[in-house]
Image 1 (cartoon, rainbow, N blue to C red):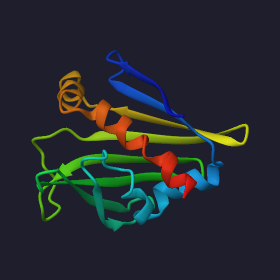
Image 2 (image 1 turned 45 degrees about the horizontal axis):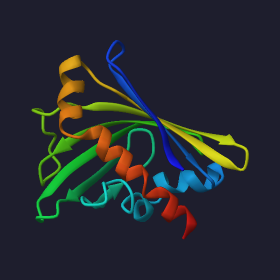
Image 3 (image 1 turned 30 degrees about the vertical axis):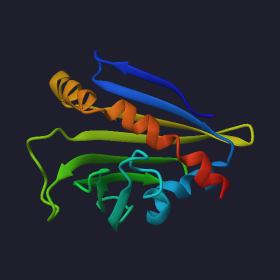
Length: 161
């Protein structure tokens, strides 16, 4: 079923995406903790991700890039804030140059991921918080909602494999 709800809340500068999966929490957790699985869904289908570094521990860093259909590479990073396996993860998500230097012209988003059992499956909630209304608007205009929804839509196939 994947994405069931997308809720944008400009009052608290957040967007929350809820998705449902038929796999147990421990299995869904692996799509975040295994870099090879993460790169199979983190980018939208036409912008596949390549994970370069993956240290999913508090204080750790994840770096990646997405490749456009034209071959352009868009680099990003996570600064991992908290990890409580297998149910929650919080990180800052930003853009970078090819060397991994933070692009300060683009906003940084704080992302909270929660995995909760529901029957024999899992509900994943991803809450993105923005520093300002302008930052939220800028990322939404860049296609963040559509990109995340499309990316999450790839997890069902990954879980079935």
